Image (cartoon, rainbow, N blue to C red):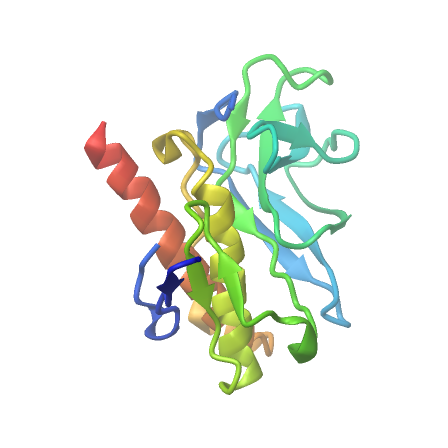
Length: 206
């Protein structure tokens, strides 16, 4: 029988492959939602670390390797086509179209998953078989915040060395509020806190 486990997400309290093929850089990436909020596109900024080509990649939960999504781009600051939700993304900038030479990595960003209330389960099982329970009687924003953190935890529990992952893009409350995305801030703040704490702990343990 599974043990029960509840991870606090709100109030932004942290709980919680070849993985590196590029050095970290001052470049950033984020997932910008479309008008209907059902999908987002990866937007990046490599102004401080320009390269010739830019590849959107996601961390595959099965192989734990970065997988290319679509074809390389040639703009230091643009947006990709819509990407699948509940994945960890980065953008890799390189000096060749094969994206193998002189590469640097952006920060990573979590693409928010937005299931309907009735599709959010009562709990999500972490990588150790422990149930992480969702407050189903809480407002939808809280349920989504918990659900997305738990989905991220499922992925991170499988990564042998989190210190080898790039840092995560820090959500900015003012910026998201100005665009009417205050609920996104609540979700991403919990995701960011958990990711950063786990990655920093892995670095300290090295």
